[in-house]
Structures are given as structure tokens and as C-alpha cells.
Length: 269
Image (cartoon, rainbow, N blue to C red; front, side, top):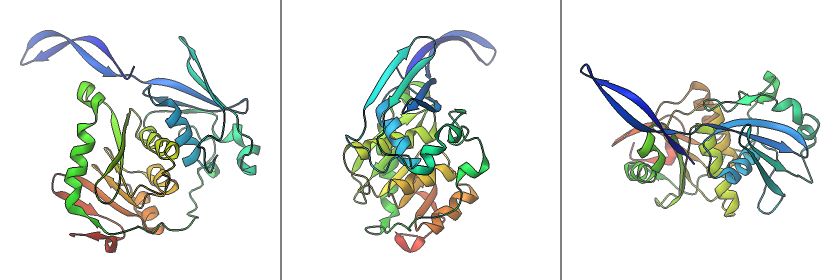
């Protein structure tokens, strides 16, 4: 259940009124790989399979995952949900350091809060730049934002949840997912693209919040060359997009948008 009700007393111009509001649910999800704890992430329940597969893919634990590994869930009313994943082949470094790399809690605001050491962040920019399939016309961005907002059911109920959406260059919407964590919403998008065998098929990732380095990294892993955000990017996010050939467009509100990187791939600026 992505939302639940809570009672409160609302004050407006000094007048108190009893209200019942819907609030976004935030609950823990434990991910265990081959019997070893990998991470606990605070997420909004729903689409947990896509969240886990997308997380493992964007963290580089698996290179593909359609029908690749057994997946099971165990629900406990006190401790939350535990997902067990059995992998046959792991990257050697990840396999040797699996427990150390993700041993702490990932909260809803930060995708790297479960990382124990600075070296585990892997901020070295390796990997090939992405090649867009065409030029992005900024004129379609208001329509993409409207499509994403229209499909944010939990946001309409609570006003307290993020969204991420994948589009093609012609404006076709592939998916929209919501989560209290920005990075979780992006992982759900990646999980959907893996499930539909469409990794590398999405052109645009649209996110409802700000863009920090982990969002850029996840978009790059998913092969998405255009990253569009409602809010601001970080300086590191700009540097990463520049290096990886990704066009970063932020402050996308109404007919306004700011292109920070690779403007040669954007039309209308």
C-alpha cells in the first residue's frame, strides 16, 4: 500500500480543524544476495521486483537480469520485507566485497548512504559515452512533464513522493514510477526496462526532483542519453553528464528549461 491515512489538526488563520490526510508510506526493504545481506533501502512499497532488479543493474551487480535469477519475498509485520536473490555469476570484485559494499541503511534521500567507504563510491568516470539516436526538441518537454504528472497517482493523494519516467524521443511514454526515494524511482524505471528487454531503448529520463551523481550514474547504466529534471543539478552531475555524452536539462518547468551539457544534441536552445 503506497499511502495510508493519518489524523491531524490543521490550523488556518487561527482556526483549528480536524483533518484526515493521506501520507506516503516509507518502509524498509532488505535485499539479500546468495545468502549475504546486500542492503536495506527505505522505499514506498509497490513494484519491489522492478526496484530490486533495477538496483542490482544500476549498481553493476548484474549486467542483465531478464529471467536471470530466482527471486523470492518474505514479509514480516515487524521487520518489513526481505527479498532473496540467488545469482550464479557475480563480478569478482563485487562478489568478494559484497557485504562490505552495502552494509548500512540507504535512506529515502540518498542512494549511497549504505556505502561504507569512500572507495566504494567509484567516482572515477569510466565507461563509454552514450550516443543519442537523435536530437531532442525542447518543445516536447512540457508535454512530457504533463504526462508524468498525470500518472503520479500517489503524489495526487499525498503530495510527498518523487517520480521518474522514461520516454522515447518522439514523446512516447514507456513508464512512470513513484517512490519516496528519488533513486528508488529511477531503479524502478531501470527494472521495468530490463523486464521489457528495452535497456538502451529509452531516450529520456525525466525526474521530478534534483539531479545528483547517483541519478546520472543510474541513467548511464540504463543507456539513457537525455536526463531531464524539474529541479537543479549538482556540479558533479553536470561533470558526469559532460563526460558521458549525456545532455542534462534542468529547471524544466512549463516552457522553461536550462541545458547544462552537450547542447549540440538539443534543438530549440
